[in-house]
Image (cartoon, rainbow, N blue to C red; front, side, top):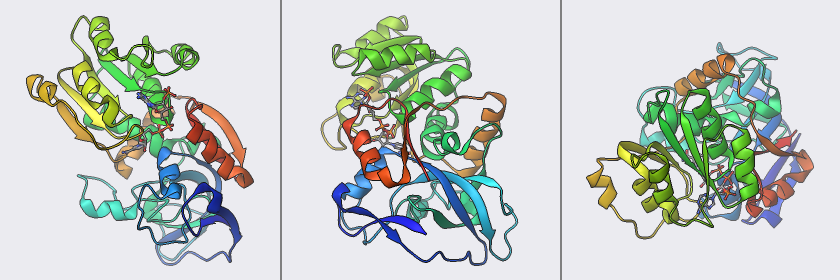
Length: 335
Ligand SMILES: NC(=O)c1ccc[n+]([C@@H]2O[C@H](COP(=O)([O-])OP(=O)(O)OC[C@H]3O[C@@H](n4cnc5c(N)ncnc54)[C@H](OP(=O)(O)O)[C@@H]3O)[C@@H](O)[C@H]2O)c1
């Protein structure tokens, strides 16, 4: 079977290897991967920015969908031929997050999905929602579940609530779509008017170009009768953190999940106390919440926005497309 590996950091070192497929052991399943989607994390992993001490060679890519090809002894959750998606934090089944779960994330340190076949513990797969094909389902385990984690698990979004989501990448577009499906008012920012127009077509109530309008936090207050957003999906990192807190409503939730603009620097904590904000760290979500999300999608179908599909052989090109930042929504690789 073919599988991507990198022996040293850098996109230029990512290559396809032919390796002997292995059989699933007790409690494990073999998945024939049909599609995987890219997340910003995958770029960081391959570049060496995610974990410079990562032991190499490694196989990247953190989420995907496929068919159960074989099951090991004692497996009860799935059967051969079932269409399934991967659970990114493989050991986080339910309940509160525990530090040890970090060691079970897929696409390092756990197995990567940039492979024709992957062996996973049976606990790390979730049945695909009805009505979704493999390409669409491959976008759900990280981007959609992360948006769900901020909006529902942490944010407790109610119909009529206001969501502010930053940028038009994978997570943010799912936050827009899920927010609208739950009856929220959604404000979205982008560097591009063309992308904002597409966001409007997906139902965004208000759009702000953060490049032309660096005080977008003030605009959010103006758009919300000076109340601010109940939930902020903070995808962008240190450069936007202070403005995100300024744009939040009193008692609002700021879900901090991304670092596209960097992780370290100065922030102004005044709004945090003065508005009694709940600034909460997000690491995708548990399998139990992934199952709730898939249930929701079966009754409120959302068509994932796939910016572009690439062939398996084109993974480096697909990652470069992500690096360019020109995409809107998700980038998918067909296997
Ligand atoms: N902690 C978690 O559980 C978790 C899960 C998923 C992702 N993440 C992280 O969340 C971030 C987003 O992930 P993704 O997969 O959605 O990435 P992505 O698809 O690459 O999207 C990144 C987007 O960030 C936007 N952006 C860049 N600078 C910005 C700024 N100054 N203000 C507002 N938006 C800005 C851009 O939007 P425009 O092109 O519209 O300007 C870009 O499209 C990444 O840092 C990723 O590592 C974390």
